[in-house]
Picture 1 (tube, rainbow, N blue to C red):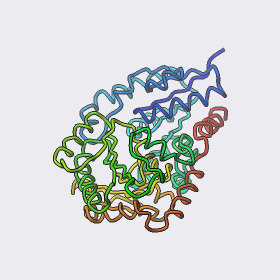
Picture 2 (picture 1 turned 45 degrees about the horizontal axis):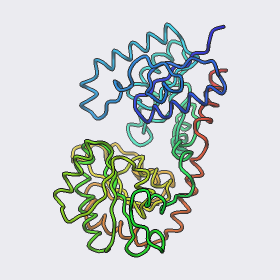
Picture 3 (picture 1 turned 90 degrees about the vertical axis):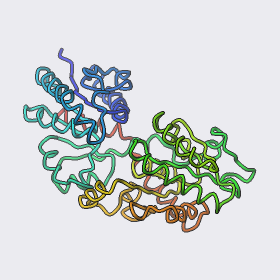
Picture 4 (picture 1 turned 30 degrees about the horizontal axis):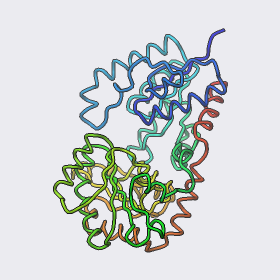
Length: 387
């Protein structure tokens, strides 16, 4: 009896995590299936056969992919030939759209069913890409509801599966427990009392982000500390390289005391009364943790000039995009000044405004995203495989 074959390509750590959960969910329907392609340690632990090292696909930015282009093209040709010689019941590209969409297109032209898990931000910019996606996939699996609406408008078969982070994180956050674990003070009156305010600072995970945002965010911290005595700061460094950058910034500010962590961003945000962060998935995590936040971002002037012309959505942060309104302040580019950001941070920390309504909105969005994403994705793929 021929075993069912399922091809998967994940190009980075987040995709490896999604892929491992998806494999386990699919095995409930196909216990003897063979899973192969490209994946990392978590997928391999789930019984996956990685034909190439995932690290070879984990390149970011504009320059690095160009440097690695010959190797990336060689891997893609190798995968295409392998799957044409050994046709899977379905091929699933997980994120990494620049690599996977082209591979999906090639395989679908040869009659192999294809799906893509995690939509590229085609709804936000370069919307013309949806035409290629429509030719490349039999099914798009999206993590966010407004993404599914976009694909339906463009007649691309789509299933909204919810967000794995919403499945992972509890509906209620134990702030005091997180503070105790990090050694941050918790008063007898509980978190958020006078002298016990904590701000989490999240300047991004990439070199360029931290280079631009860490000095700005630390200047904001110093500005806030002058106005709110006893304010504590916690800053998780995404990697050893980012830790070096952050330590250098702090060395230039000897009067500013910040607890710097190696990773542990989830615990840092859980321990905080509010979060100052760069836009991205971090904003979604802060929302799921029910934390007031200020979103701020800056890029080089040329990148900003290009991106601002291409952007097709009114907001950049996921909480605002999900709500369809400004739930959290966004201070971008020229508006990202120390004083403007600082005023918003103090407002969050001192519970000004309608904090109760905001927390309820975060709770409602959490429930909307909490769908058991891996199981829903597996169910949708099963219908496509068995069709």
